[in-house]
Image 1: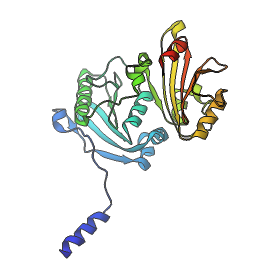
Image 2: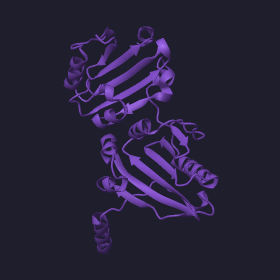
Image 3: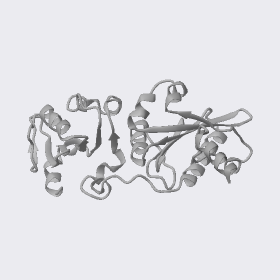
Image 4: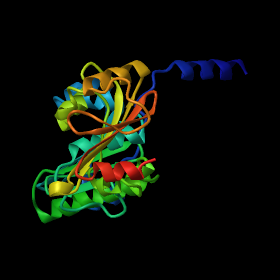
Length: 277
């Protein structure tokens, strides 16, 4: 009994190695060599991705798992970023993906392009990069992404119902989730002034419509009532209440709670404001 207790105490104090999440295995890519995974913590992220680590940390990052796959002259790289939440993984996906000529079957938040396959599922952001443009490498990249998507399981991140099937659903595919100043600088610099001095917030933002119907919509959550008051002052609407109020710039703002506002601007803003409770 004493030996068992001593062994248990030793196990408790042994430093933990990186916990393996979803990984590629041999049957996923027959004929390819798949490297032993390398794990990089938050402290090691700076050296691994050579710039941009702060953005991942701003959203909430745990570790990245890297695997290289080779077959003769063909090569691809798989990086699996484990974030702190599905929301954080979706947020990184929303600001990193470019034009998406195609998507992965069964994955709403996915982008299949010649230079990269990127998708977010559960708390994982997965990047598969083919290092050459051959058909064989591209097909292997798709197979790798599909295998990891299945292995992760779970379901796609679900934004607020208002973006899924509600009044703002036309902007669902263009939805951004931003969490901090670095995300703003990368994806939505026009909001840097209204959110100046606010280091922590959750902002869902989208655009939809063409021409005179072009519209912007957002839901902003601040971490404190004081932060939201500062944002309202910078928008020119200090003390905005529960009714829709128009800024000098033409935007409509409604306070939904002490820390949350809804925002509409553009050709459909007034009509949408009547449909949003």
